[in-house]
Length: 206
Image (tube, one colour):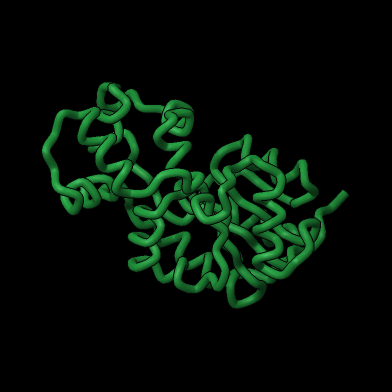
């Protein structure tokens, strides 16, 4: 059966709207892995990241735990700058996002926390264009919890079944599909453009 034309498109953040270089810098040190050996699954299972992503602890608690793990004496501002120094822009996704946003409501569904999200929202025009982003630390939920997807649909004002969701992690895509949301795993901007055009969204050819 051909999927229906999306009435809203909901984007993941890291790995979709922006690249995350979690294999460098601070995070491998926190998890005790060698550079180049950090995998996303290990990162998202770490209790520190789970608690922070759910909003169960705040930035200063994370700062104290991280400096304790690493034996550093960074002040809070130094820690926060290092924590956020992992992002790289995706200009091709910026262009596609705004083309989509000119046609249907756009949303965000992201496992993120109160350091990364404000940092990125202050710098990313795409995030500033989303009226009601759905973020884990505010919702107290993480993907693939079913109610997290339902909240994202409410925040764009469109029924779950009429939303399209894109995420770079397959289990998060599967979670969206389990609640009746159309979803695809992110590959790259041209592939996403083609997927949306196949569903009848009037976008320019890639």
